[in-house]
Image (cartoon, rainbow, N blue to C red; front, side, top):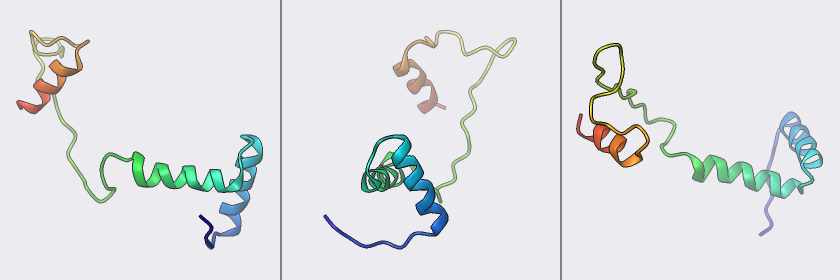
Length: 81
């Protein structure tokens, strides 16, 4: 699809340099940047969430019984807090 956009000279210059360096068209660079901005983020930038803190025991290790190599175990631990 064809469209017209306005970019600052500095942004356009950097995008062109990037396109040459990575052997991409300018359209591909702009499309990739939009995909990263629109689709790759997990949360909107205006959504401020406090970082999660794990309960620790002893010298700051993880809770007993949590398998640190298991994503499911870690997720269960975070959701149960």
